Amino acid sequence: MSDSARSRTTSAVYSTLIDRLCELNKATLSPSRHDRCELAIEGTSFTLTPSWDANGDIDGMAYFVDLGPLPQHQREAVALRLLGTNLFMVARDAPSFCFNPQAGHVVLAGYLSIDRGTAESVFQVLTGLAHFAAQWDLSQSLPSQGPVPGAGAGSAPRMPSVGA
Image (tube, rainbow, N blue to C red):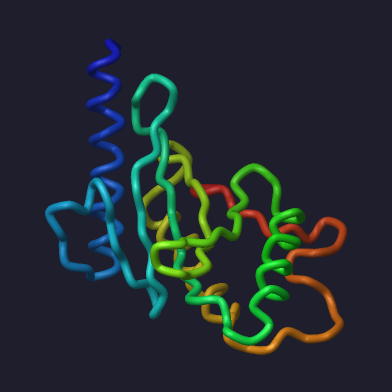
């Protein structure tokens, strides 16, 4: 398969995946959805964008889950906890916490390979992330003691392999 044919194929696979995700979510198909797809899944805002390999072919989908702003109280403590949690989340297919300075929001960001699953399995992963986001309320006070989310031997949150 030529490079241009492979590029068209991976682009078509990604486009089909995005279209099917919109269908599963009963979302309106926006003209720009293949470049930047905005979805709300169970009340949580997601941004989905294509991810390219070294050859310029789409090999996956980057996702960004909006977790909202850092709280005004204990702002530094929450930011440090998020960074500490990232330490335990370093693994293949594991998301990480980021900060979007334009929006002023904490974001959970990750990557899903488009060749390892179906739209249904990707939608299931995104729904799981929506549930996680609903539980991760940044506006609540942090406990003075207790485990950091994701901390502990073997408990690093990892994204299930889509299609597995």
